[in-house]
Amino acid sequence: MTARRRRLALAHVLSGALLLCACSRADRPLASTAADRARAPVPSAGPDAEVHDPLPRDEVFVPDPVGRSGLGQPCPGGADSGLDRTYLAVFCDESGRISGVVMPVDVLHGVPPPRAEVLHEHPDPRDVPGQSLTVAVEGERLWIRRVTCGRCRRVMGWSMVGDLPRMRAEDLVQVQARLGLPAEPVLRDARAWREASRTLTRERLPAGRSPW
Image (cartoon, rainbow, N blue to C red; front, side, top):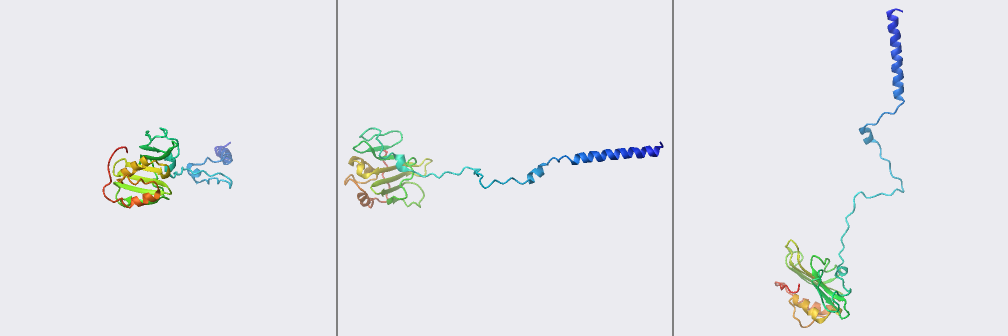
């Protein structure tokens, strides 16, 4: 065989081998690249699929001052007014149940509730927070919010809620004294508090410490 024929035969064999290799590669699926995977469509959920919110929704805080106060619950000290770590003052009716409480202003939230009738508000709620007093009634229930330092790191003061028909005279007198109201007459109902609230002025509020 001449050299020319040997070269032609070798070229023919090599071309056949290359063709066979190309065909075998075409039969195998190509590996997807990262870009291909990014462009791939995401399977859509069926109509009955449950959709989960990826982020938890913020819960809305709704204050429940009546539930927080424990009105109507058994008094911690029986029929006499008593103190514990939660309450600044506890007022009990003759049956030994809580008729009114005084708690730190930053503990008993939602005082007074939106549905209550505001009898007195000092100062104007649009003013810069400082000392303030709000007196309100809801039926025969009395609500008081007294802020003694609204600019402090922790808001200082007290909130009070009481069921007037069940509160004892000595307890009502104590509340009246904390507002600078005279001991007589004893304000036993919402009507009496409406009348007395007219005498509350925008002068400096009484500061005393005991018992709240």
